[in-house]
Length: 499
Ligand code: TXE
Image (cartoon, rainbow, N blue to C red; front, side):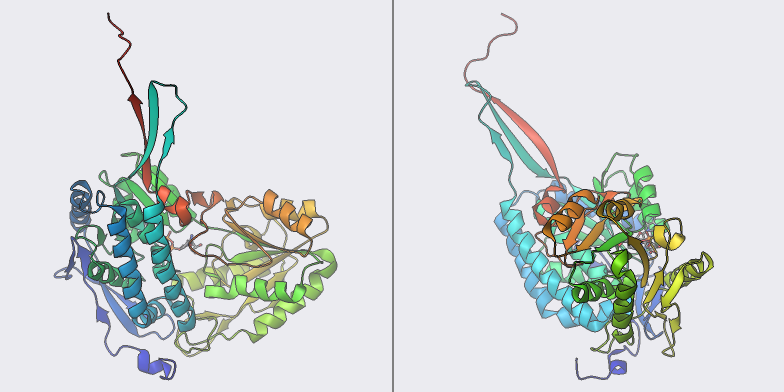
């Protein structure tokens, strides 16, 4: 694929998908389609069915049957693990195909999509081990007559609503863990990036996952997504997306008090001390906001930098931005691809205009790049940003970095914590006392020291404050999808209550 010209990889006709219920692909039939155009090229690439609420009900019923009859929830974990390991092999085999559809629908660079799919193979492999490691607890300290067990049971039918920024990666940060716990799934991908969620259905079926354990219902957030959040037979909802829709999920969940896992927005600080390796820090800061065009919940969008080096550091980041290769997502050399949707492009450009209007100093970028088709925005840096500006407070979800200088460590921590969000944060310093003090005091679910956006399936993901509830990945990510039961066992003859 590396040697083929990019236009060769564009489909001549859009690929038409069905949705997936009870182990079978269901063709759209009379249902209308979403037609998705590649954000980098403007050509139609996929057609995705607009499912109905009845389709959702059938999928939830299939997931319920599969859960209750124990075909997955009650088999030995070694058998669950072997399905997950086979799925990892099949993803590896189909990696090029999955990466291509990911890039065609999302606009991310093909090299990045490949790396993400490779990461997903590792997540499935890790989750296979986690399925077998999952265990409860025992209490042998309750006296001679009472013995206590704490068991973990799969929570049941899990509704999974995912966004468009990492359609396959975010899916794979959840699905193998949910399956490892013994639950069954109804997934609803973003309406603009559904292809790879549907391809995963084929992968899991080939891997031997029993019918009904992974279902995919495609459609809009306002119909299928909302209905899933309200559904009385969904036991848990895992939602990744905007904080505003996350709030609606909390309200909708009151019907049956379904458990919620929420991974929402972020306005993540990158704190740079003068004693950092500034060359490394500039590279990391550029990567932290440029990667995935800044459309990551964990993008480092606030640069909090020690005043004595602030101007020099701005110049170093600007020099890095100037060298970033923005362009055709299908070109293997591209580092930053297209903005995923026209609406998101509009949102980002509106924030750039607000930054200018509110008096921030535009250091570089700020404009759209014209490649003849698609939406591209140059990596953008604003200096002299004050805490009250929209570009300091709101999640922009684009390649826009706001610089705020500090004089003391206390001030750096205060600026970092001055946000409603708490998803991720980074600190750059060669002084271990400073780096660890900041790591311990900044309220965020993921923290990086002298790096950013690093990670693997071992370490959990999730947010403090309005960035969400719960954790994904790691052993925590399996436990999240379990219920805890305490079992009390009395030994010997009972002391009578009534004699
Ligand atoms: O997100 P939505 P959008 C942020 C980012 C971005 C903004 C808007 O700031 O600019 O959100 O993006 C489904 N009930 N993030 O509009 O709407 C929807 O179909 C149930 C951060 O795309 O939250 C999709 O599957 N579901 C984020 C998913 O929710 C509903 C990633 C996310 O879409 C629904 C994406 C409803 N009423 C955006 N309405 C992150 N944390 O990474 C929509 N959906």
